[in-house]
Image (cartoon, rainbow, N blue to C red):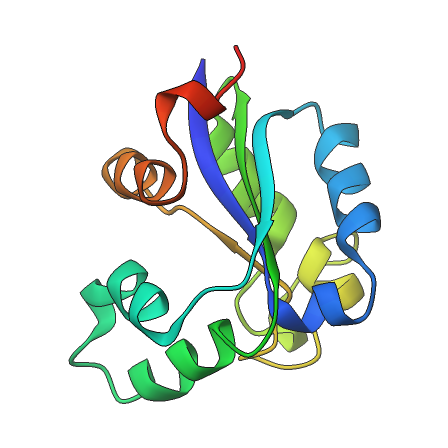
Length: 138
């Protein structure tokens, strides 16, 4: 079993899409083993996205991620990282395949509704960033 982090971003939460996105996740066979709604501070968003600090989009990304509440969860299942990334779809919703979260709900490349870990190492960092072992069921 593998674990990955999911974030339902402020654009999707503000449009009341968290339930629909969670349904898609669960319908795909992934199991939610931890979940909470938070409103990140700028410092928390910067800490989470620290690997992108030198990138030109860092300031916009971190400002967006603390612009409203997000739903963070840990998903578990066989090959969970790859399966969730496939379910999310391409970062740019214009390039996302039909049936993916981003094709269905994303507004644009920045307001693309969801985040998911891209590798086992990032999944380990990202899940520990938001959850203690006491908050994970399973």
